Image (tube, rainbow, N blue to C red):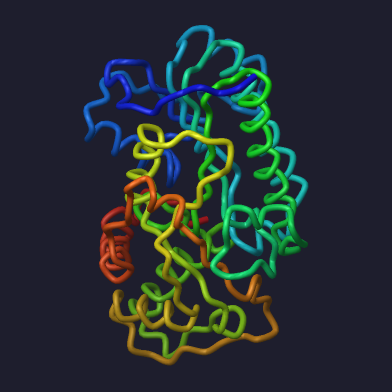
Length: 323
């Protein structure tokens, strides 16, 4: 069935479900929607609604009947977690996605935005990575299970568009960071892991900090509040079957990132690199031409974003995820 839909401003009074509204991305989406006048936001904590439980999800949709959905809920983690628990990352994310998307279809949700990850692209994709690089090469083996789950989500969205004509879309963000991140040693990504490690080293007076890998891989980082802004922008200005890359269009080496983080927390000790640990993908920079064509650009610089995240980390240290 062909899709015929013209994006326009969303109804601020309609029921809007943010799946994963307590997570890094979901909480930012929630803040952004509130700031933009949405008055009927719906969210459930994981202990209130297990999104892996298909029957419970269908009951929730039957009760709330959302008009719009942002699917930001996912099991996420860094290289260590992905490499150690691939079954969990594959199975749980597939369960979450199929439960929410199937329920959204059954209960006639008008607009769905599915959030994936830039790890869906081949390890050695040409840089910057275009959307049409999807499924053109081998994935990074340390997180291929998670990537496959996210690719399945993209295909789910495309299939709903093809079979049912629903104007659902997908967005693939680059590495995200900001308020609400996971700072645990085993579950965090590189940015929050560095912020925690360097701030603790500063506080303890440690003479050196050792980071994983060589420090040479290049990564792109997007503040989560910019990501949230892009989500609403896409819902109101974009419609199409192809996933949309969301990033800054700029990257830095992990060594450069370490220096920025050390400066932001005030750490002045030595920085070392453990080259026996994996680097992961050598470079991952997204081509955001499609997103820019819709009229959106990021606003938060990397330096400003890291400084504000360090401040948030310190102010919320007693209640954030540290284990």
